[in-house]
Image (tube, rainbow, N blue to C red; front, top):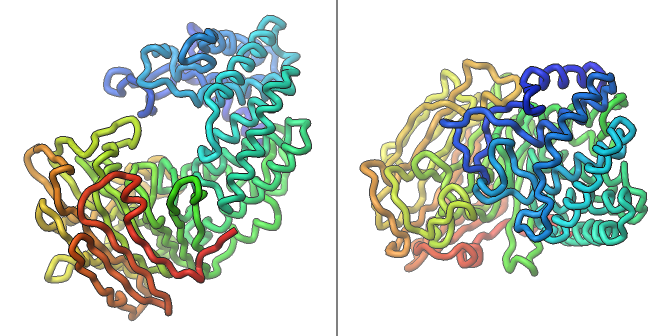
Length: 579
């Protein structure tokens, strides 16, 4: 960043700095790990954001800034658990108000995040810290390294696998600790082998975490003296930028799906800023000056029509494979996974469309009481701008989270529905519904979204189509979206809406649905899909553009691993990009 941007950040953060506790106040936005609730604790003293503020102050280097940075670090460091016998050894809580013992499952990632920030702070600014504080920072880094080694995250956890490799590798070099250094090198090599074994990151195409992965890999190249580790990081950086460029849609200015993890269907300001700065040639005075390799920059301007299908898992380890498919042209993109639970951070099917100068998105959801429902399993196939997909239900998963909110197929609810959420909806977007209520169309300029319910077999009864408009919660975080467009159109297929009641998927014999979706140009119709009604499954196939796809799902609810294995998806084989 340049000096002007650095000063903007310092001034912005200074507005919420509390001299009493030497920390920043911040709105409570965390939903995982903390037991605090926004209703009772709307603001908190954030530790990581305060540590970041201290780093910016040290970068600026003014005497009063350095003094404040020292005070902030003195407030943050003692909150680390430094007892090797403790279950939370080496990590920090999120907030000053909530000690580790009071959290809802403390977050082990805090060893990685704090360790990374403290290492860079020490490397760049040790001379600006008091001798006592510098010693304490070194001790904190050592505890963080031991916590990371004790946890030993696998290579599938992309950003933390990389960040932990950085902390232990560079932390080991900084502290002259061979155990840390050797572990960090072996960890980045293990991640390299795993990732290139797939051909992409297993935390696939994440608008929020791919930039983090790139930053952490860049930090290895910037701060490590180990040539072998730097070589691995350089190749992984190249892979990450290629994935980002292949999915960035220049027409809409959005990051095309499918997304393994994202916090907003629109690109958030920080994600957009990362891409914009990385595509510059200018070198700034502050920061790490991360730049996209020049060979991948044309991908970010391309409006060419392209299709991509690639595996996202190491099949011999997972026991099954999940494929990601993308189709894009100058006006739209459509991305799908072949399988996945309907977690709120996952986009199993998402499209972006350009109409004039306005962009809309279409996001597929399965909702329980208005929240994304992890106990619904998606399975889909795509060819070009056409997709077949369906849902069945899980008996061993969660409600809003697969690990933190396990319900095992038994819960109470007053509303269950499948939603096609159209963000950026404007006046003139009027759905057209066929007489049978199974097909709905929505016109976006020269393109039409068409959705058809092909099959439904469910003990709870048939789906009922419902149309509505509501707030688009993604918009307040989006960049350049007019306030008048801060709404979403809901195309809902309602499974149940009424008094709260008990649901038990273990008692259900049939609960599966099959849909067809197409993004149609002028004069085009949905290709005819043949629906197969088999004794214990629903299935369908279609041909479009000379390619055939099909999906078949058991109708009975089952276990998550079981459904990853038994949900059958056939993709055009010539499209699949393999290592």
